[in-house]
Length: 266
Length: 266
Image 1 (tube, rainbow over the protein chains, first blue to last red):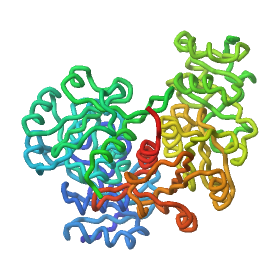
Image 2 (cartoon, rainbow over the protein chains, first blue to last red):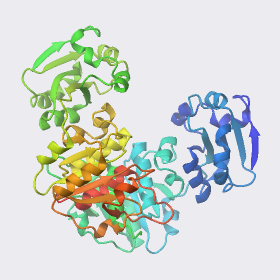
Image 3 (cartoon, rainbow over the protein chains, first blue to last red):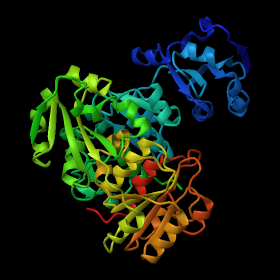
Image 4 (cartoon, rainbow over the protein chains, first blue to last red):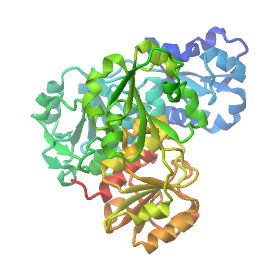
């Protein structure tokens, strides 16, 4: 790797790291920010995204050596003092380990589905607009061996900085794609031989009684509204049985239970 | 209820709401802050804590009527404009629905356990120091009908403002108590006839094969360190099977899976 000392926060080589928080809101021209040793480890190991550079606090470099060995040899690794890093990022970076990745072109859901194995497990998200939930769902998807995540246009960005952090890097590992029309995706998954289950508080089957199909798609919607009726009417619906009087489960918690149930992991 | 208009942010009647964020850090003399309509609904319905007052944005009062009807008739309900509420709270309160509750004396774990029914489900937390995780675990505990949560001294406060919010009020509903020595609690639960399971990535039994006992205690530890070895060696340990290469599950997600498995709800 190529270690480069940065002493000026306005150095053009670290321009991609400037004012990280503000730039979350306006997009980053095809880039994303990954933070922390564990996330960088997944970023390099999974190898799904090109990495443009790393910026690391000088006293964290030694501890990052085994992680950086997984990266391309020519990767620029910028090293700076705490004061310089804080001035670059625009706030206090107590972790002090950052990388800029390149999103690449993205993939239509159709071509991602074409790459999946015979016994694939796919998560389909509709209206997941909260980055914490998005990150947690990706983390659970990775933990239980999901092969892909498909998202409708009302879902938030899984490569948003906080979503990546909450996912502990899973958003950089589990392949994902966006789709426009849910009806189209449902028809396509059906043609591809996927059993399709929608999680809903009013689902017809207790999830404990739902059988894994060889290829399986699990649909998750928002906590408030749930999945649209038009979609629920075309899918097998499953519910998670809850105690009387408090039938409210976070969608990420629901994804953990459902993915664990349908997973073949272990 | 007693509706009182507040026009001065320094009015002593709303002193308990001053600078809410800062006061989170220094404690509040036996009080806690509950936010939002759904949380207040649980606060009044559960009736576990005395409520000192409510502070609500003037244009939210009408929508809160059915919730406030569950409160004591003499409850002071302070109503203010957005500008005044923001100046009281010290930041922009877009929800604009707050209540101050009284923690009461608290209960030793022993006396809480003495009140539990024959088929009780108890969650035992060791070292859960993150308020998001604490709130999520309480939410899952309520969703799956847990009768009590016991916490060691290294756990964070479930009545911290953010923990209550993330729990969607479950921290105000599910009875909890603190304990000092885990060994003492384990011996006590044993005497009271509880089967005791510890969740651990290296658990001896896949949770799918773990049988519910009539009275059951489920131990959860931190994500990083897990439960102390001294504790694990004395309990039946269960694991959640995960995909190869990404064996990291958030403790709240793990609690959802385990509580769903052991729950008799539905």
